[in-house]
Image (cartoon, rainbow, N blue to C red; front, side, top):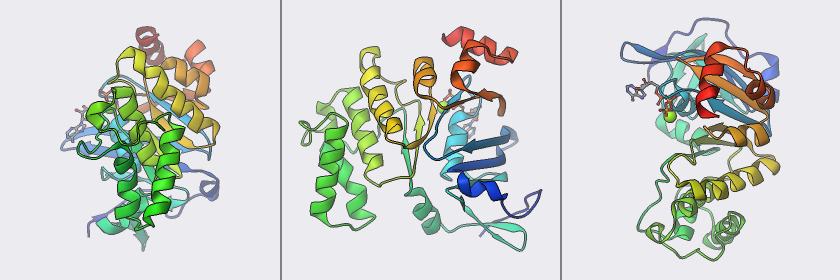
Length: 269
Ligand SMILES: Nc1ncnc2c1ncn2[C@@H]1O[C@H](COP(=O)(O)OP(=O)(O)OP(=O)(O)O)[C@@H](O)[C@H]1O
Ligand SMILES: [Mg+2]
């Protein structure tokens, strides 16, 4: 078990229980390079938070810290009131065992730029895999739920197709259904449409919009400004490992306050 000395006060503030995600002064280094330099973030239940920023600003790293795919060097992250990756004892944080981390990760769905489906499994099998193996649920129930999820993402007629028989947009929708099959309370999206041909982007964004309407809490790293403006409840602009600007997406996009935000938006708009 590793020990981490964390500066600051022990114990979470009271408001944290009303939040789905609370990150406080998250620091992350790779070797001597500090990639996250104290990130704060608060996401309410049902909120769609869009994360924007130039390449290398630390967006993916921060998302990966939220489900403890990366260990953090300082700070804290709570999801639904639970401290992620660490246990606090005597004012010190002790890293959890892999099994405990895995249990926390189960309630957090993640969708990446590349779909990472199992190539030798059908769409349906990709979606049923984790609930069957990890949660040991009943096969018939899992199958019905998976079929309903694939139906929901518009693939009700492709249950038995293999990934190689599906378009990129269809594969990404399977990946979303697969994440939803674990009934997560939070979904993390890391540029889910940036590997897709332009004509396939819309169908994936539509599925994400539908999820948002349904009340899913989502953190979405995206360069799709239209999505951020239309669906986002909040926008966080990161650069160089810090949050430069945040606010209502429509306001930030129409009237960015910070030079770095202006320069970035000028490039992507
Ligand atoms: N495992 C790693 N080891 C060393 N450096 C890393 C590692 N992962 C990321 N980095 C570095 O951390 C910085 C932030 O990377 P990150 O992938 O979080 O950026 P990003 O904002 O997601 O960029 P992009 O828009 O290109 O996806 C980069 O300089 C990157 O090279
Ligand atoms: Mg990235």
